[in-house]
Length: 130
Image 1 (tube, helix red, strand yellow):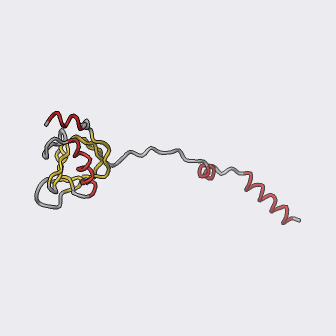
Image 2 (cartoon, rainbow, N blue to C red):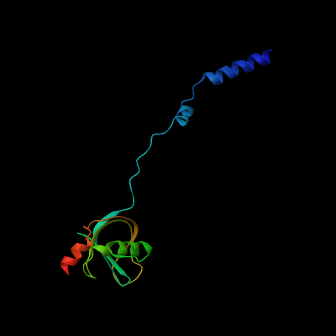
Image 3 (cartoon, helix red, strand yellow):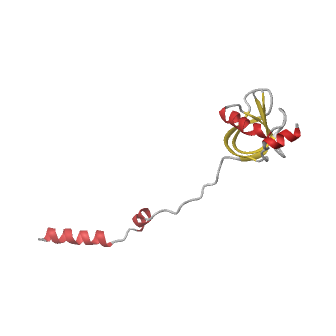
């Protein structure tokens, strides 16, 4: 009987005590806003013969040629009048040191194409300019 009474008291003491740490763990945490760590650049893009360049107001980067650089080259093609025209774009990039000894100190790897910022020319506009 004493054992039963001791267990009952022990149980009531354990259940009756509020554990603030446990309550904090059980409650849902507030959502944290995480800043985007991938830089977004706006500049003029050109891709010619396996070389790409992104030029902005205060930067010029060589572009690492990969599938994303080629996709961007295809997307800007309708906006170009001549082969060497540069088209304004907005992209998310990874900036890294150029491992080659030639060209720019830093090159970019295009991670995401956000937008092509030039007005798209209609076929009628292209016929007028020719």
